Length: 259
Image (cartoon, rainbow, N blue to C red):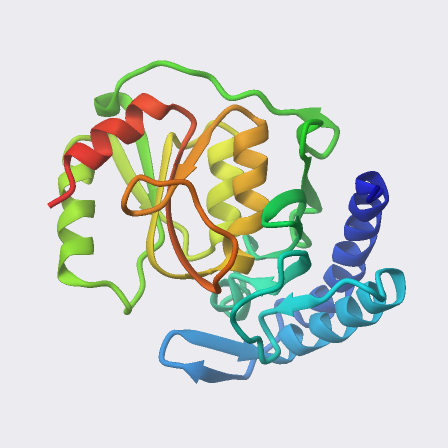
């Protein structure tokens, strides 16, 4: 039987070790390349990759790694570790603190362990299947109830959006109290789990390493995550989209507003 608590312990150590390397470059003049029109790559990404790869290969030699800063092939294996070495690289490059290191363990197509560490905030979001979600040492249980017109909507917007994505967001945004965009998926999960937002729409351009840890954390805290068609998420492909909320009734109304 897989020792999930050991995996979580290693994830916490690995993410903080990577965070130390990232912070060495934070706040300094940052040069970057564009992997594609919407993907920024900095030296901090590569330094984090080096640290994480070394630790994970040493501690889990038999488990495949799916990491953002490497070539990955589909179909993905049934069991693997997935990693975003620096989520929110654009924020990092602009001196904004809400970037993170994301790790998750997926076993037989089901996410079992997740860890999102925010180096500049020194905040760690952890979760384990059946054991709950924690922000540092505080267990998270999301509140239910409320109404869409009193909710705060969080967005991830990028240049891969189709016109129908913008129309959907506009329809929902008009029904909510306020809307904000963070440009970092890990930060979006943190705000949702802290109760600062109520909905999170990430409709295009995201990858499995953006979602795996945060979705498990959300579910363990009592929330819900579905794909654009209203079905549960599958962990067998790299590109993904998701709608996430603390309350399933909010999502039902969001789907009714889909163009």
